[in-house]
Image (tube, rainbow, N blue to C red; front, side, top):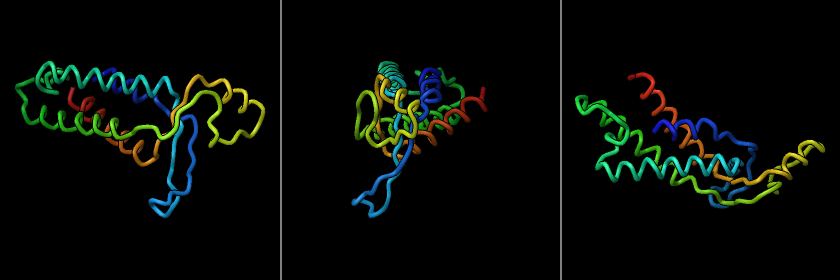
Length: 145
């Protein structure tokens, strides 16, 4: 769980914007995430999920003391929400170099964006759900140590 929280903290957007969504009949926010950071988050989430399935429960995989069932149950619910949010936050576009939706305002921007090894464009609302779930779990973990 520590690795997942660290990966999420390092996974900051490299760009943000919005596009017209016919589905919502409004503008939908999007974020461009660094591809390596996003992959680290997915890897840590997969490892936690596998650890939980091997141990039988998420709370055991998190090292949650069995003596505090209510606390463990609450933490397990937060972890499950975070894992579900990460699973739902699939990119709708990926690539290397410059993301076509991100404007480059000067030569420096263009050089940096053109050399980006990988990026993922994700829905802003889904990314916000991941952020909220991670913040709630982080608060519970740091507040109950």
